[in-house]
Image (cartoon, rainbow, N blue to C red):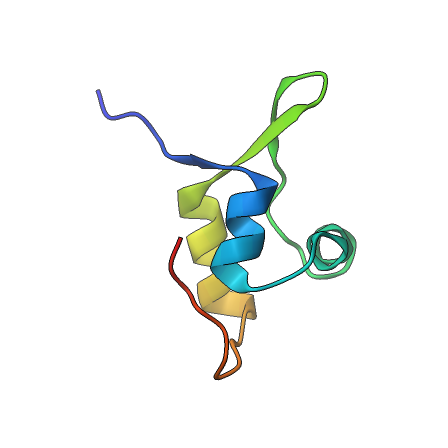
Length: 68
């Protein structure tokens, strides 16, 4: 059974070259994937969901590094 990869907010921010405030804004305005709540203050996003969203909605600038 394959385990799914989960991303932290920091990993997403680095991957997309965005600030935390942008991530929060996208959650309300750009249909960004909903995170999984693992504990009261612990949330993670499925890598597959984030990748699918970036293919549809994210248009990187030339200076954006898409690697984790």
